[in-house]
Image (cartoon, rainbow, N blue to C red; front, side, top):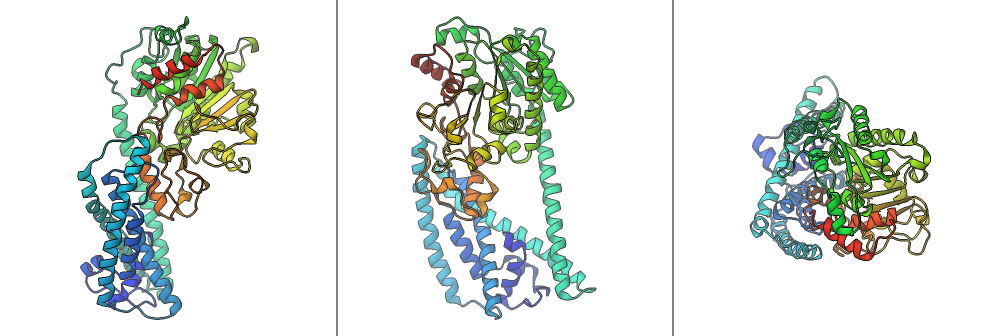
Length: 573
């Protein structure tokens, strides 16, 4: 689509003899013809890219998503095919020619066979991925519908590109009345490109985000079924709390009102337990980020959180969600002698915040940890709780921003567990990019694992095996099939190391990198990254039990205890 927007298709459409290729400013005869015509090189590009769109990515794709990916990649392929033909003619210094009927016949026959073959292979690959992850859902009606979805989105993006091209011609024609034709064409292109960017980024995206933020703010007022106001002062929103129950937001109320109680913990670990403390501030609890962080810490202190042995600062995802599977193991393994504090910074769901709300996550993560650390550092050294940090997804991004690097994490915390870190995380990228020679990106080793380590399955192994891991432990959890971890804009043009490495246990061995195509495939995986069974994609559950056990090193915890805690955490969903 990009090259079609750039006007390259306008030039190659001269196959019909209506464009002066020297300057590209003459109008086409007939508006409908200009919008609906196709070129042979463009169609070949569309067919090849559409076929490649059926190759496997990280997660299983339903019929609608496959159609969407196919339509987008086909439109990109069309534009690239048009651009390639235009460049070839420019170097060959010849005019465009009317395509022969045989060229169209070859395209229809060979292209049709190619698409059918890859459509069939795509179904096989999707079956293999579903088998790796234990996914049983399969909607054959959507699979049959996927080619029609692909055609719709291909046509949509092609028409958008050609509409922008028409605006370009109109602007260039106006400018040509005052400037030379080449200057008018170049200036017109700059103006239209700039206008398109401003409209998309300043109007469409901002307007869409604003509308969605408004829509999700309504759901923030809803309390989930079964969630009731706490009757204990150990939870925000409960008796004596400095934070009103109604201001916590939907996810904050769920976090404060749920989680294992002292009796729940005793039943699992078979030892006397305390009631865990949970403090939380919602978006409506205070006017800005710093005030919310200070209020959350005030409520934590009121509840006695700084008097517990273990204190966890958790950075939430966009909507304020805290994964119950992340905090519950921390409370089980400490026998309830724990306090956790978090706060909300957005109304948007995690995947959308991941794309557009990163600055808020950064600000919230830094503000909350700094507020906790400021209060914690004033306590006598012999009476301070062990200070831990954790986060999942965009929460890891916010959690990282409070620290400058490995030594800062080591010196200011007792341990850290980060799960599913986005690929753009500053520290995650630093640790991964500067990994020890010979260690793979899918499970890197940094500085011989002295502080920071990575695990795809902490119950199985946390490399490097046999090396000392003294003092503060920082552990990153990342599934091989988690698109949040591996998605990056660089996928458009650059092959990452992880694709060329041996595939993880839940990634199809046949996955390979292709310019443009792989980027759109992994992008399409993002919204559905949690729609897979636990232990795959972006769905972390029982892994947290072994992660916290490795980081905290609690005394007296047996293998049977870990099994019982895994069962309890797995039941949380």
